[in-house]
Image (cartoon, rainbow over all chains, first blue to last red; front, side, top):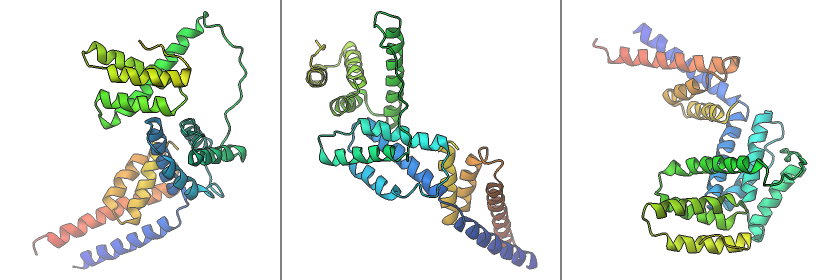
Length: 214
Length: 66
């Protein structure tokens, strides 16, 4: 009985000690949660989903987040990259999106997050070997996007619909190329792709000013 | 700190706040490589481990035939 009582006293002491230790923890875990949330917002943005209210809330929560925080360069770079990706998907003609886009720019201006380094390069002729590397880069980027999009195990037709929505909403021509690639694959497998081809043609005409889809 | 490790640490703290010590032990384990040199983390992890062992022993004693 004495042993049990001793153990129970030890249990209470340890619980109390842990409670006090946790209470003195700095804000780091909150930051990790916020980093995770921003990652979710970025993923949904890449899938063409509406993220404005969540992003707005994220900014509201983290407005003074940086004061006194001890973030490492890699963590700041993570946030910077995610916000940059999210900004690409924001449509500045929509007032709400424009406000969010301005907020991201504001963070860059105030050095909360670093701006992209300006690298000046001589434009290469596409006849040079660079075109092959660019194509490889595009395929890798598409593969990376696609592996993330496959997380929720959607059918390829649903993924194609997401890609077309992203192609409509974003400036990145990768989505147009990826949509074309998926459509061609589905066509080879015997799927009826007429409506998707029509949608892609319309998007291509709006975004690129011409259509290459036949 | 990688994002994944940071998230494990964050979840461990949350679990400890909720007094979910078994869950916390799992998350602390996932974060331990990154925090091997962090004294505060090691104290936290060791205390949580000791508390779990104490609880297990109490459980055994309370359920053992008298």
